[in-house]
Image (tube, rainbow, N blue to C red; front, side):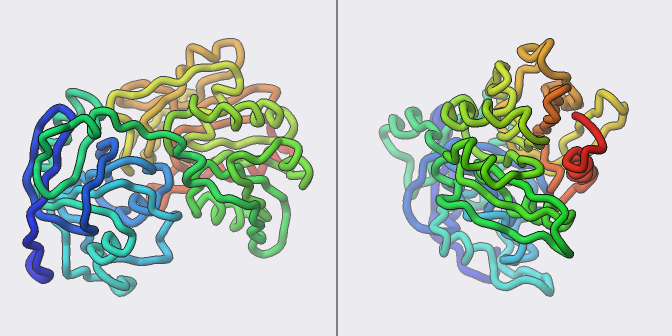
Length: 362
């Protein structure tokens, strides 16, 4: 950080009492959140604008962040992070698409941050002890009660849209898709539009009758933040939708479908976040590299006799995909719409298109 003068000190305080001194970046003020790390080498703009990070302080494991600046067309949504941690923040971005530097973005969005801390050491702590809360502040507090007691709550209601909105298909409408917005990334909509789908995005509290009233050819269940079990009303409405038309669920949509089908979810020790998560296809045998951002997982054993596990994480063997024979419904934990990559699993959108066309079941 040699151009902009970053001189104000800041502290990162973990709920286990560990303190790390660094340099203040971004907005002023203290911030408490759930501390998570993401391993992506690129895609920091998509991370910062992904609603699935609602209530969390995000730490990048890649040491240099901000080197291609801020590019607003790459935003996935409204930023919902509580704080941002980097080893080194680039203040001289170099990219023909760059509009301005990342520190300005953090300030304008009101996101407090800290740079110059040992992100490798902090990552090891999270991997060994599990996800914990943290606070970005000017000086170590004497009382950690606000850090220890913090909990991400009502996250989906916070980030979901308030009113339905229609997005036209590209090159002529072939299908009508209802998108349940639990914190949807924009590229889910773009991926459907590019395949000839007119997308009507509904807020997370939309009733099943309202969704079916547009006579959709299929229903898309989006990603989103927080504990899936908290979304009791959304799960109840989803029960009314399953089996009516083809359904494709991503991330939180995957988890909510499992709960609606009578399954269970669990919180992972430190989650999967980054663009290099290996996922094995249990049907075809191939392993894909995927983009992920989640702290909870479906317990596949809880769905025996109801659904079939289709993908597993190659690292910890957790559930990465389910399909529900006879219901025309399949879901995945990872992000086939990923920007900035990888795009190995974008074919799953084509599978959804085929289902809506009546060419295949789940």
